[in-house]
Image (cartoon, rainbow, N blue to C red):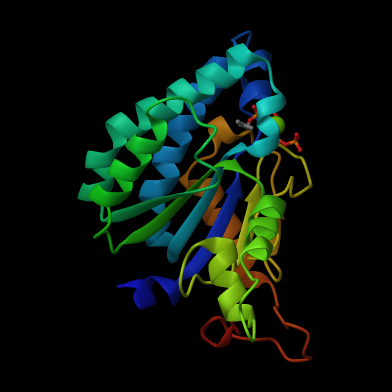
Length: 240
Ligand code: IPE
Ligand code: IPE
Ligand code: MG
């Protein structure tokens, strides 16, 4: 099951622009985040048909705690709602959900809801959905570094497991960022070492299947070389 998915693409998405999408329409930022959840549903449903085996979505960064309390509370409420209402659909669609990032700072009950959702979806073999919450790539690397004492010979594979919390996680093939911003904002710095980058002006709440297909089409036109001189075919992409 794992190995099947890891032979398919790993796509990461920085889901940006919820707030601007809403304020441009005279709506509250919260309405933008709500519309963003709809976009998540669309993309999760469309991903397997686009050759995606692993989808990592950036939902809340560790730096997002800097936002006004009312917005953070609303985002946590949406997360609670998603976990309570989405699991059945994920199971039905064969989606395995895991959450990456810190859990110890989340409001009461959310860590338990995450653990339940992960357990209930554990058998999904159509898509591995990873949602990044209270996530910082630098913290993930730092955290791995604090665990390496005692390793005789540390390999990239071993360190990678510590960073990602997964065995055999495929490196990220493609990182998409919506809303016109062109930066990584502390997302998948280790796993994305050779990721192709796709930036689109589309705001996240309006991102749809066609946008995903366009991002994938642009990805498939790229020539990836991994430091060599020849283009490397997808099935030959080196790991680590
Ligand atoms: C992305 O949209 C969602 C989160 C970061 C939680 P934003 O809320 O960053 O929207 P903009 O960038 O302010 O438009
Ligand atoms: C990145 O978006 C984080 C998420 C999409 C969850 P931000 O809106 O927080 O990033 P910056 O502040 O513009 O870099
Ligand atoms: Mg933003």
